[in-house]
Image (cartoon, rainbow, N blue to C red; front, side, top):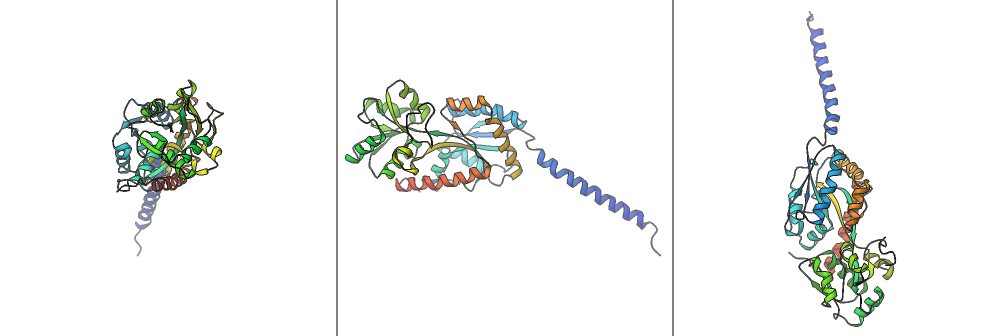
Length: 333
């Protein structure tokens, strides 16, 4: 004889199962919507108080408003940004630790394959934030009025003209190396301890040309102490509309080079978390005050169309810089 208690027991089991399914369905979207539920930390690979740090802190205020959570800026300085990159690469892949990375980390890995991070494998791209092109400058009393004249002079006297940079592998160095390679000329690279020494070396006659970043060079151009022959960016500068790009002046696509910055999360960060971060950065950089802060620092704000778009851009930049680094024989163990 069937147990008369079975139907109620069966109903209880069915109700319990339905309740569990409902709880699971409610829990899943709630978990996704919960990010961020605590402060987000952004790692800056520069010293506190410097230009990039100040910019990161100003931007962090707006980012916190967009995320609805506090944004904590932490400085991890050392080895040209390598320590900061390694720290974030080892962080939990939950979106709460971000790296304000740049093209410098791409170059570091290419020059030193042994460093313990890989920009393309150990990070999830969130968005590019902006570009910092360089200016090709010479002294105001130099005989060259155009980049074509300078290249002709370098070609006529191989290894006779010097160009300054803030160090081996710096943006100024690699842009000079790219010019040598593209135009098949030979100049002498003179690396200084920092980029602040580039313009003085030009003014003192120790070097004949250089590629300082726009924010460093423009004051000297405007007061007439140095002459700008070209910009390394993809387009002319609003402040110097008469100055051509290297690409248009010399007809070489590979000479469109700019330092760039971006936001990376650890590899494996969930797509829904990356999407929240991406949209927050889009909202942050839509603020005219944030854009003005960047422009004052010589950064041309340009965000990626999507995290995947930033990933493709990083891969293209890696291939571009790999050619320059290899040709310049800058790879170490």
